[in-house]
Image 1 (cartoon, rainbow, N blue to C red):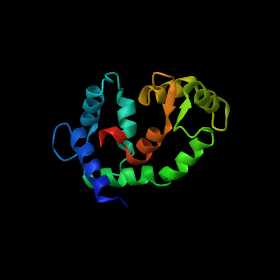
Image 2: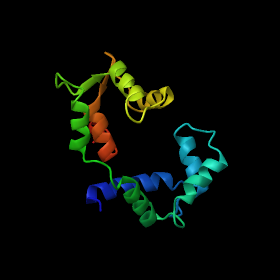
Image 3: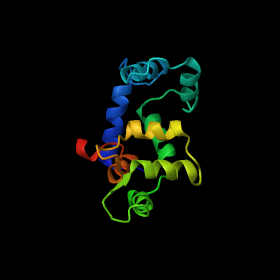
Image 4: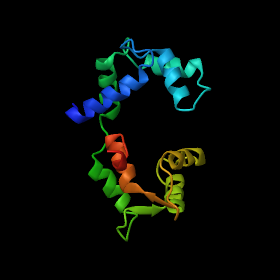
Length: 149
């Protein structure tokens, strides 16, 4: 289902999330992971909902299977890139932030302003106000920034 390099990345993520190092991700591990990422106000209901997604205790095998299920149906990087290229008539690999915001909020499955702002928080615009969609597509399909590899 995954390439060896992807499995290694998932193993690293699992190890980071398994805060108490017992080989399982539990509710406490999730809470601690969120806290490490700066989100301190995660409610028990939200954590319980996340834990319910697993068919049982979350060891690495279950963790990998859950990601496989979540990623099933994700379009290949080239398909996602081609969708962005429709809006990039100059072929620069970037789109004006205001243009992509407008499109996301007015077309098809409309994003809310909060959802667009969250995207820009996770994938900030450059100093010229552009979104590097080539890097965004890479992160969507590979899970990390090209520059971090």
